[in-house]
Length: 123
Image (tube, rainbow, N blue to C red):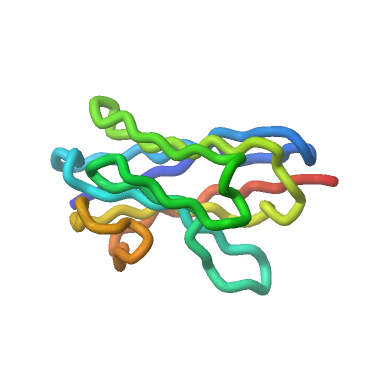
């Protein structure tokens, strides 16, 4: 069974940056897709970005152009670099993964989730 642990969240100023990490343990994850979701208080959870096993990526419009998702298969780690942070990026960020690795990652029904990491952006 795959286990995910997020890190890298914290407090940042508007215009700053953060790099979130998702460390995965379990079997070989080369054929897994990974996604970052976020949930702000009072809002529904939304997908932020994802990457499939072929390194095809997706970004929600609100972060496209200022975020980058990447995976280091040898390290079993997925990263989300977020630049030009805005107060509206404040949320709990969750990493998720699924075996549907080659599919369009934004449409996968992710079944394995991490515990989340808080990101707070001050204005």
